[in-house]
View 1 (tube, one colour):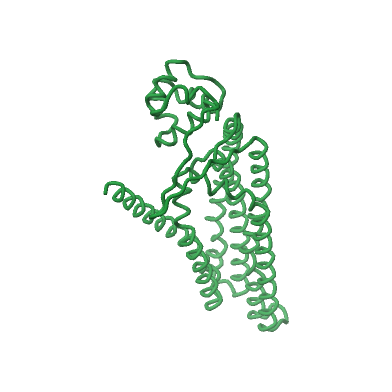
View 2 (cartoon, helix red, strand yellow):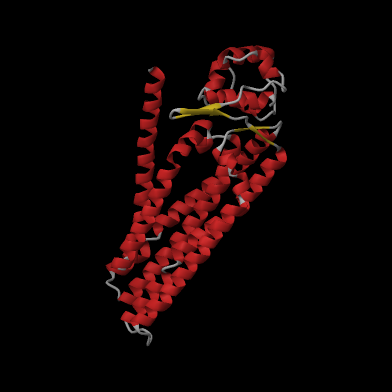
Length: 336
């Protein structure tokens, strides 16, 4: 591991941002950023300062062949240690390409799930208003077949993508170290992608907000069931586009964070996710069941979509509480 990667790793271990480390060293944040991307090398005085701040020897910082001790994880009463896997430049590029291509697959599959009830809604409302000579039962059959077909196709895409990336899932779940130049390359790509991520996120959020406008207009004009059904279909269509954008840019952005072990992919977050994976799976399965049951029971698809944003906010809140409890528990155990 080279000096640039060691500085990054030690800074993160101490929970400091680049700016916080820069303030302690009396340099600019840009200087620290260049050190961590291997674009520049700190002088001897800064090396000595970092040695004291990080609590490591100067030999460890300067000699590439010297590695930190293997990280040990402690989980409940069990503990285990494992050597860190090395990520090469080839591994990093393969992972980034896989995530970039996979983001399209996952985004499209997600949109298919959102769009799946459109035909059912439109056909049923057409039958109720006698727009075309189609019985309500026949419209329901065709609509349900389309819905199940779309969901089945989406599930197929999710499964095939999951299987294709399974050989690299350890990047997101386990700690690792990168070879020379990898962090700098990833950092550069992340910085260049940031404007795209911001624009995509902004447009996606705006579309999700504007998606309800057609149904509001239809309700305010007291339109017929047929036009109300069309407005719901338009709502789902706009929502599908917005979510598609959010998923695409989000997955690409997270691929950079994964390799840099930042954001949701720090060592601490990975350990936390190991403890909450089961809860997350149960929570979202239950949310999906509630959404489908409520939607089919009431046929109020223009209302039931609210389950997802509410579930998302509630999920974040619950994870925050769980994290706080686990943190307090570990601190108490450490104190004892």
